[in-house]
Image (tube, rainbow, N blue to C red):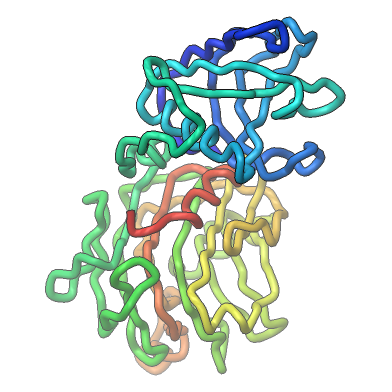
Length: 354
């Protein structure tokens, strides 16, 4: 997981006696768990950005710090070092931490520059904010509804870009603070997203407790129906699936997963991405579907519907049937104008009130 946006830090690996080896590299990334074929999958992975050679004969790009009861403080210190943008001093011992594949080299001891870690609790890291945690994405964050700011019937977009006009939705306890409840009868919201222009990549992320409809199809987020220019997250009673449409549905612009009734009883995190890797659906940080090929969606002159779906030219008689109102609660809805990586999806899934 790419946790933080910081300049690359100088990594000085210092020998204290003949049992240790040294190397010099640059920390370009921290990942909270290594590949499954590592000796210890539960570790922080350090990415030097390129292969580095040390005196123990290891030439590898990646190293890892095991997250165990004995050395979990090393993990905290590595993260604190990146957050505080301070130099890191690390000593190596071949028995403690692993490189992937056949070569072993180990991080035996880690400390912040100017601070000698006694092996106990690490110094607390500086407080993180959104820019620390999701800074690479904040530049691409085009819409964020925390559900905390409602003025009259307007749900405020935290980015200042696209407020939602609400019809009937009510405040409720959310996953983080306050959420919104839609009754499935006539509650919905609308927003004019024409300023997004044409996008060839996107991410939609939110927490929800959604009841699978007794009638369908029912839309969670949708533009007016347009099979060749579709932006739509909806349920279909036929087959019991949740669908993600982006682009030309007739030309591989759709992915879908079977609905799980367990998701109706607890807050569940959903992320939908589209980009050069096609269309992806994540549930609670796990990739559940990946297929198709993303194209582009033109948002100009399109009014986005939240918790409902419209069709062009609906008559008054068809209004209610085609509105397809959703019944459920929602919190922390975000839209980015690029496809997030699996690590970034997990960052969103792992968010807390802090």
